Amino acid sequence: MFDYLDYVREKNLPHIWCSGCGDGIVLKSLIRSLKKLGIPKDEAVLVSGIGCSSRTPGYIDINTLHTTHGRAIAFATGVKLASPRLHVIVVTGDGDATAIGGNHYIHGARRNIDLTVLLYNNFIYGMTGGQVSPTTPRGKFASTAPFGNLEPSFNIAGLAQAAGASFVALGDVYHVQQLDKLIAAAIQKKGFSVVEILSPCPTAYGRRNKLANPVDLMNWLKDNVVTKDKLEKMGDDERAGKIPSGVLWDVEKPEFTAEYDKLIERLKADKPAKG
Image 1 (cartoon, rainbow, N blue to C red):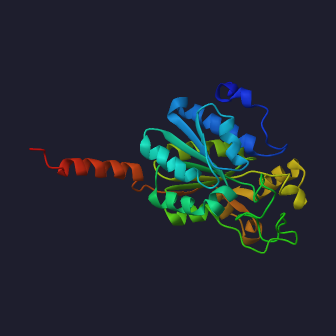
Image 2: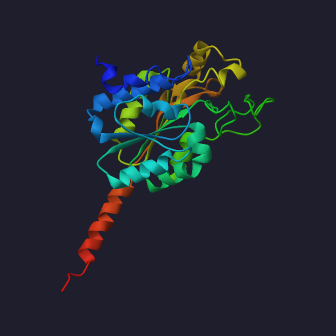
């Protein structure tokens, strides 16, 4: 066991997350993954936008960049291009990444640039008032859907895969040992890697949907998030409503910064010598 405080900015504690929020669990999972991989603090960068998840950089003692709403992947792209040796990790939320930041999410995956995106999904805009987000399930309640949400929700993992990501996984804050492995695998993968992380929000989502008790939300994750392999063995009745977890997509394909470096070298070779 190691001391988490070695990776925490103690002066910023206590944190602002609500009781029962899963974001602190993700923070510790990320710290364990960095420690396991032996990544020096000065070789990791954590980039965020705006939202509950995006407060994470304030508490972790590595290089951090807290940016504007929906733009975390755009800023992270600049960091990676400027210094490809760095491990650049984005923490973002379902609203931050797939609503205002949707195009950056899609094009980051399309480029297959070497970023690790940890996308906390709590099914709602938690920090800004409990509005419907792109992942709020149909029929669930929010401050902007007092009679139930009419819209279907995004398939976050499927969207990343379809757009061109090289690694896509889904985990949750109940099955935390699995989450540690998924985050570590995503960091090690060369290319655009996404880990969708289901994290409960008892305050904005839970209390509007009869799940205000954090234990109830954790039990919901326990009962409904099932490994992909286990899910494939279930019958149709058992499979209904279950969410597949684990590595959902893992392929090898050209990575953007490596291809960019090749272009630079080719242009240097083609450049005529000065007479």
